[in-house]
Amino acid sequence: MVGLRVLAALSVLAASLPACSGAQVAAAAHSNDPARNAFERAMALFRAEEWPEAAEAFRAVAHDHASSPFAARSELRLADVQFRQETYTEALASFRAWLRYHPSGDDAAHAHFMIARCYVAQMPDDWFLVPSTYERDMSSVHDAEGALARFVRDYPESSDLAEARRLLHDVRLVLAQHEYYVAEFYLNRDRFPAAISRLLGVIGNYEGSGLASRALLQLGEVYLRTDQQPEARGAFQSLLETHPESPQVEAARRYLARLGAGPSVPPDLASASIPVTQPAHGAGGERTPRR
Image (cartoon, rainbow, N blue to C red; front, side):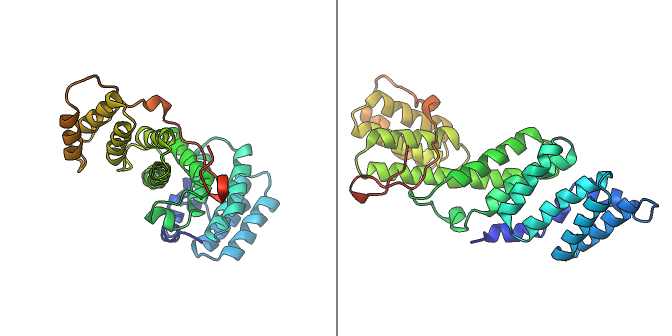
């Protein structure tokens, strides 16, 4: 199922295309360079959303003007057409193939961003609306998170940076929700070490998701249930220090008052690693996350 968020975002894709497909090319449309003119005609079809015709025109530029810089640009636009036609697997392969031969420059930034967009586009809508169930294979969501994080890191001057950051926040929220859901799955089965590991993952890997304060409170409660009072104090104190405005603060204060003075061990966020989970059958036919 194609995400409605993705369909809404498609309308702004043309604006995010590199400069080579904008005013610079348009200014040369009536030059004596046949490759430029052919490319601009193809871009006109692209802007008109005439996808089959645009694809054919870009292929013609790439074939008939193979030695021109517009050949490579046409090949990249072909991948954009595939994305606009919602053939995301094919578009992903095309962007990757294009980057093998053109790894740098403004067009490369666009290709990297679109690779991330392809991953996001394959995420169903309900992954953005509710916590994803523990059975789901999250590997594509991890791929989206990794691609977006690399783009934000490597292209801080890109015109797509704001959109990339927004998508990265949304994807990380999905991952945090999933990890929180899995932690509750383990808690309901008294598998406390596994639940602790997942809660640490939410806190350590997805700060900004809005779930860290809830995870800290629940982490402290799990430590109390397993008679780890120094670790419980550390979790509650960390909640007070890092999320002083959160709704969980009052509960954390009550727990600390009940515990009284004593040693405190802060959460070990260095151990907060998130594995890619896949569907698996546990003992007795129960479906559990694979570690």
